[in-house]
Amino acid sequence: MVLKELSSMREALGRTLVRLGEVDRDLVVITADVGDSTRASYFRDRFPERYFNVGIAEQHMVNFAAGLAASGMKPVVVGFAMFLMRAWEQIRNTTARMNLNVKFIATHAGYSDSIDGSSHQALEDIALMRVIPNMTVIVPADAYEVERSLPEVVLNGRGPIYYRVGRDYSPPITKDLEEGFKIGRASILRDGEDVAIIGAGVVLWSALEASKELERMGISAAVINMSTIKPIDEEIIERYARKTGAIVTIEEHSIYGGLGSAVAEVVVSRYPVPMRMLGAKTFGRTAKTHEELIEYFGLGRNSVVKAVLEVIRGVRRDRNA
Image (cartoon, rainbow, N blue to C red; front, side, top):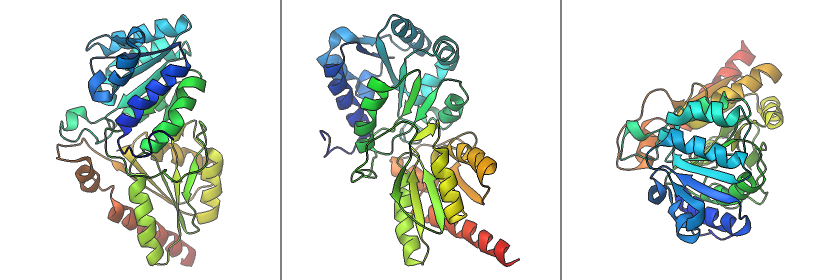
């Protein structure tokens, strides 16, 4: 492990890209004038001949990457999540329809660009990417999972992949996780019997903290890291639906079309159980810190505890009816 002391996801991203550039000479990085903010600049400083800044021109950036992929290179597109969505048509038509091997790394996702406000906070991007055929969608939980998963995504992943990270706030959610990363496989952060909390990204920290509080209340909560949202790990969702009988999802994204929707699609088709979804229902807002917005928009520890109590009381009420 190279990044043991890091807590910033973009720092982990920048340094890991440099490591990958050392082992694969076909790897190229493309940005839209955000190299310094995303830390893609670390790759520029080490491999200037394989780094391209196209300016503030995301649609051109995606088409340029598609051309490189068609000629056998391994392009990694790095940009702010919010502004990559400008190129949704190019991502769909030029890249995904051809199933080209382009990796889209979307930074500053969710509420993580807290200071710049709602115009810079992408809360709809997972939904937009999930609906595109051939597209894989991955949301690592913390800087440690960026370091663990990015080599698998960039070096071994096939076809277009959307990889979503936040800016800096990154509590140590997977620091002690021993298993390696595999696309399409979820990981159990904490086992439990009464409810399964399924999440993606840094808000899993709220779920872990909530599970400790719930344990003091006599409730056993499993916490599952669903870092691959598409293709989603259907087996583990069904297993925990059967085991616990209740599910709460948490995501730093709209509840419409995101992780909660993806989990619900599996639950209703394989083993229906009561669910609660925690996530965004409107645009974000400006704040001094990322953590402030997580609390403000109901994604903190206490909100998770409340949602779990609501869903469990509903299950027990139905059983006693």
